[in-house]
Image (tube, rainbow over all chains, first blue to last red; front, side):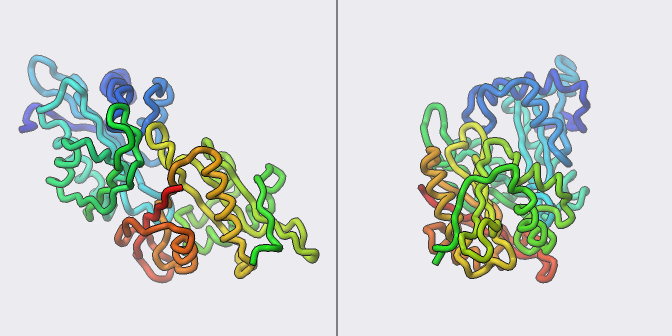
Length: 170
Length: 170
């Protein structure tokens, strides 16, 4: 399924391509709580420079677009101090890369990486409940919805919808 | 109950007294996910300078210690962008101010302030489940536990305990 996708640590030189993936998704505003008008420097700081964050990219290994960044993920402690053994993670798949197994490949790499780094669990704080593709993927990978915060996300089309808190042990 | 406590916006000049309240609580490590060895400059940045945060202090209006900071609270958007209509809040009551209604006075001011600022709900992400005094206070003020993240807090005495996510509409 994801034989033509390779996941590796992101380098600073990947940023231009990463931003090409992030910008339209953030602008659409249907799946993330980043400001829709986030500037490139703000996004760079938020995605690449968060404290203790590890950033990954999924790149194509197909002949026709080899090396193209198809998606990106990051993980970091969900809380500092006494909560830092639980990871939080974020994933964005490029809008024209759907169906190539990019999300699943990133998820596998993030789960492996977080385990290797000693995290004991992973928690998502804000999975938009109408983002069915994402919810389905996380459930298939062992995450459970432990709460749905009602009306916590202002969807540009649907109005106020819930945010799932999802969790799994590692 | 809180007739001898007044709540007002914090000023920069309050910091020395605020730090006197925060430091022993953060060092004890039983109720907050701040690093136990957080430095004063780091705490200043985290408590006083978080983006869009409003910071309050509860000060004594008793004759014998008038003006002394007894506790502090802050509130800010729980998420940016499409999640910014839900407030998050944090409260710390000085260890020698217990029983004076400081937490309740701060909570009332934070709820009123958040409503006035247009927030539609309030969410706590990390209420340590063994912090019974806090859990009881929030329940009495209409907050519900919508999830308990298992083993998400490394308590210095009790080991891994749960973190409640608590929520109420405003």
